[in-house]
Length: 303
Image (tube, rainbow, N blue to C red; front, side, top):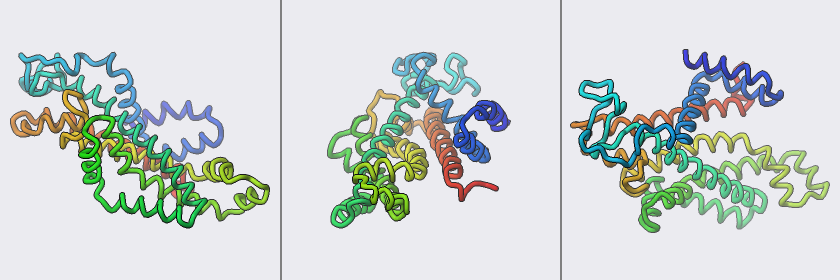
């Protein structure tokens, strides 16, 4: 099986890792779904990085003589266009490859920005407490009280639809998860003896929170970051489907779904391709995140 092959290939490399990393990998590979997710995500990332080199056609170029061409493995298909073409004659495979770069860029950008601000606000709330804690938590509660897609649409309606603003809107929507997780983890760590010892030794607040406390809060943050990427891809695809994300002719998966919805019965492959790309990517990231959770939390490791 593909999962067995992936485990075999990576096991030899894992044997040369330092003790903690080797223990992490041994725990991670027990979840075969997570290993498969890691393999698929790695392939998608590689395709996204080298998309401009390996795409058979320009994703924006229109071949009017081959509009709505079915995939090559379906009757009436053409092997020059493996996944067929859309209503304007653009190659679907090329658009999916370039779209992977855009969707992953959105996912990783949202994750990084959300984590940076989430860690900062969470540490402030945990350390300062009082009014600062209350204000930060109430702001996060306000954001969470509004359905995520509705809030993202509201933000886009204010600042305008484009790729950059999509990242801003999805970041705001996802921020509370990082803030609340960071605050809860930091408050737990602040009650432990090693933190008390650091305070007695005269460690300042900034060093205490960033050097002493933060490293011990990273495990749940890493898991949330992995899952946050898939959430961001889904939110961005939803905005793109509504015409509020990346704008045509940008080959973003959500926008591709929106462009093809009128052909759902006449030419279903046009809509199926970006839909399956979103499904496979999000599912793979979630499987990988599940494996990270099991590997980073000793309580969840299999005996």
